[in-house]
Image (cartoon, rainbow, N blue to C red; front, top):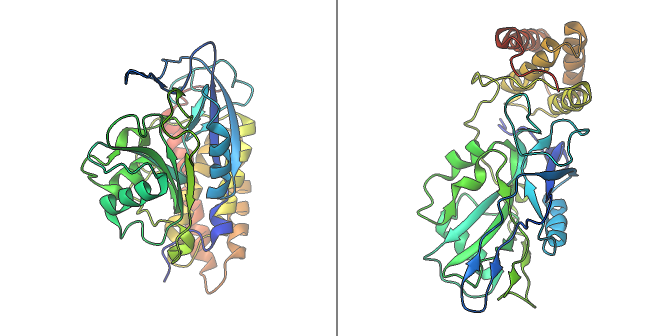
Amino acid sequence: MSDRIYTNDESSANHNHVIIAEACGRGVLTKTNFANGTQKSYDLVKYFNFSEFELSDLRDLYALSIGMLTQPKRCFIRARIKDPSKARKVVRKVNGDEATLVLEKCNWFVLDIDWKDGEYTGDVLVDSQSVLLALNSDKFKGCDYFAVASASYGFKPGINMRMFFWSSRPVSGLDVKNWLGDTNGVSDPAILNPIQIIYTAAPMGIDPVAGKNRVVWKSSILRKNNGMVDVRITDDWSLRGAPEIVYNKERAILNANAHYNRIGLLDIGYRHPGLITECIPLGKLVGQGHFERDEVIDRAYEECSNWYGNRDPEKDRQTIIWAVDKGIAAMDANNNQTGEF
């Protein structure tokens, strides 16, 4: 039986987003390379303007990345905007009363390749394939990806780039860290930390890649698993007792619809744990006063009718009730400590 949440490229693309953050003021989000071999690092930027973009697949992110090459004041963030009305001249913050961003698992992720011992060739595609061999060729076998040369590519020794992938199921940064393991200095795990800035702009000043392909797409001939990597889920957000995020109504509706859609797409072999994963956060939204308990239970149960094959309707309903009530209880225990936005 399948253990996958999603069954094909189209279904796995639901509800993936990326934030493009623009630096306010004079700061830039790329490095400056000088002819004497020295380099000025990224500016320390405090305030940003956030824009959120929905992604249907990895190629959408690839297209955005091409445009970002010439945008030294912009970067990516792997998160969502908490309140669209509070997305201008704000700080990057995911906790507390002044939080501006929300963490959600998504299918896309990025690796920051800072491989000082890597054999630089000047060809981003060739060097990216060397990186995959060094990381673990079995984990990345048959996957599609794209690579973006960093501002230090060709200017500093080694191989420096960002590599973007699509997972067969939504993952957190911790999921990717645990799945990837020790990279022996090939990849910097800091990029997988929450709300980490993802720099993709070309450098200012000297650019060794000028006139060449700074962004390259690689489709696997084998295309194992529809070109997706199979990241093992080890980070259970729903059960680990982190401080609860209280959403405004607009965001609550968007999140609830995402959970309902994912329930309807649950595959054989993952339906019971999948219901728990999706219905606990639905219960939290009930606990925050956005929806009625019976309304959420009935809607989640209705989504199960989209499943193919044999199922146990009574067991499904009891699982939904248990998970929704657990989510409600989590909000009661939290006592709304983070406040409304």
